[in-house]
Amino acid sequence: MISERYLNALVLLAFLAIPVWAILADEPFTITLATRAAILALAAVGLNIALGIGGLVSLGHAVFFGIGGYAMGILAFHAQTYTPLELGGLSLAGTKSMPVVWVVAMITSALAALGIGVLSLRTTGVYFIMITLAFGQMFFYFAISWSAYGGEDGLSIYVRNEFPGINTLVPIQFFGVCFVILCIALYLNARLAASPFGLALNASRQVPARVEAVGLNPTRIKLLAFVISGALTGLAGALFADLNRFVSPTMFSWQLSGELIVLVILGGVGRLMGPVVGAALFVVLEHWLGGLTEFWHIFLGAILLVIVLFARGGVVGLLTGKEGAHV
Amino acid sequence: MSAILILEQVLNGIQFGVMLFLMAAGLTLIFGVMGLINLAHGSLYMVGAFAAAAVAGATGSFLLALIAALAAAALAGAVIEMVVIRRLYASAHLDQVLATFALILVFSEGTRWVFGSFPLFLDIPDVLAGPVTLPGGIEYPLYRLTLIAIGLAIAAGLWWLIERTRIGIQIRAGENDREMIAALGVDISRLYTLIFALGAALAGLAGALVGAIQSVQVGMGEPVLILAFVVIVIGGIGSIKGAFIGAILVGLTDTLGGVFLPPLFKLFMEPSAATQTGSALSSMLIYLLMSLVLIWRPTGLFGARA
Image (cartoon, rainbow over all chains, first blue to last red; front, side, top):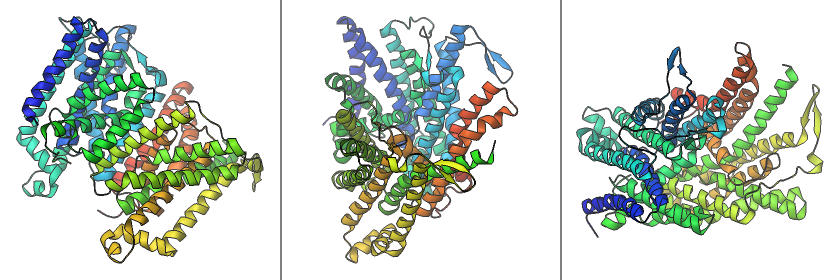
C-alpha cells in the first residue's frame, strides 16, 4: 500500500518517462499511444469533475468531446479550403492556430453544457442518466445528417494545426503540448476540489438539502460544475481531432460516453489521478488485448465487471488500500 | 399528400411504437420493481433476433423461431440476473450503468465471435407476406399489421398480468415495499429473476419480430434501447401505462416527422436545403419532444411525483 500523493507523482513521472524511452528506442507509435492516453485522460478529468465530485452520472459527455472535435474540424476545414465561415451574417476566416481552436472548443462546449445542464438538472438519478444519453444521441444524429461538414463520413484535416514555437507534426512535441495541458487541468482540478466551490459541490452530491439549508443553491453549483466539466472534455475533443486529423460523428457516439465513464471508474471515481490511471490502462489494454484478439472488448467487459463488483475504488483505490468513499 | 399516405404512415408509426413498447415495458418494470437501470436490455433484444434467425435458418419455421427468441432471451436474462444483476440492486446507479455497459461489451463481441460481423436475414413467413386491403382502400403489409396486433395483445396481457393476477399483486407490492412483501413470505429473489426474465423475453420477442423487417446484426439493440429510454422518460419511469403511451407517441413522432418535415420545409426553403434541414430536424424531433415533456413534467407523464 502506498500513499495516494506518492502514487500520483509516480503516475505522472511514468507518463513522462514512457515517451522519452520511446524516443531513445525509436518507437514513434508508442508516443502516439501515450498522446492518445493523455488526451483521453484530459477528457476523463473533465468528466470526473461532474461525476466524481458532483455525482452527476452523465452518459452524454461525448457531446462535448464531439463539439470540441467539430470546432477544430470546422475551423481547420475553412482554413484549408480558404472559404469563409458564415455565421448568421458574420463572415469569419478559418484558422489553423491551436490556441484559437482550443478557446473556441471550450466556449462552444461550455455553452452546450449550459443548455443541456439547465434541462437535465431539473431531474436527478436515473432520469439524469437517460436524459444526458438522449442528448448525446440528438447531437450524434445531427452530426450524421449535417452534410456540409461531411455528414456520416466525417471531415479530414490534412495538416495538424499549429502552435507558436512548436512543430506539432513531430510526435513528441505534440505529446508535450497535450501533456502540459493535462497537467494544467489536473492542477486546476486539485485547486477546484479544495476550494469553497469544490467543497460545496461535494456537499451538493452528498446532501443537497443541507446545502440548501445553509443558503446555497445546489442545482446552480452542479450546473457550474457541469459547464466546467463540459469545457474540459471539449478541449480534449479538439486535441483528439488534431491527433487523428479527422473528425466524424463517432466522436458523439454513446459508446464513447460509456468509455469515458469507464476510464474514470477504472482508475477510481473522484480521485485526482483516477482518470489518468484509467486512460493509461485503457490504452494499454486496447493495444495489448487488441493485438491478441479481435474481440478484446469481451475481456474489457469482464475486467469492468470485476472492478464494479469487487474493487469499488478502482486501480488507485486498490493501490492505496482505500475503498472509494464516493458516489 | 393524400389521406391514404398519411394513414399508412400513422400505421407505420403505431407499429414502431408497439415494438418500442415491448422494449420499454421490460425496462420500466425492472426499474420500477428493482430500481435498476439496465443498459444491457438492448443486448437481450439482439439475443432474441439472433436466436430467431438461427432457428429459422435451421428449421424454416417462423413460429419455432419466435419461441426460440423468447426462450433464449428469457434464459439469457435469468442467467445475467442471477450472476451479475443481483449484486447490483443495492448499488449506486453509476455501478449499474457500468456493469450493464460491461455486459453489452461481452454480449456484442460474443455474438460477433459466434455469428461473425455480417448481418443475418430473417424472412417474413409466407402466410404473413404481401399486403392486405384495409377498409378505405389502403394497401398495407400484413406482417406489419400483425406486429401491431401482437404488440397490442401483449400490452393487454401485461395489463391483465399486473392488475388481475397474484404475481401482479406481488410485482406491484415489490414496487412499493420490498421488505414488507419479503416478510409476508414471498421469495423476493425468485420474483426478481422472474420479472427480469419476463422483461428479457419481451425484448427478445421484439428483436425477432423487428428482425424480419430489418437485418439482424450486432449492435442492433442499442439504438432501440436508447429510444426505449426516451419512451420511459416521457412516460414516467416505472409506469407501464406511461411506457405504452410514450411508445406510441415516440413511434408516431419519429415516423411522421421523418416523412412530413422535409416537404414541410420545402414550402419556404429551396429543395436541397429543405431536405437536409428537414431530415436533420426529424432525427432530433423525439429528443425535442422529450425535453418539452421534461420541462412540463420532470418525472414524465405518468411518473410518481417527486
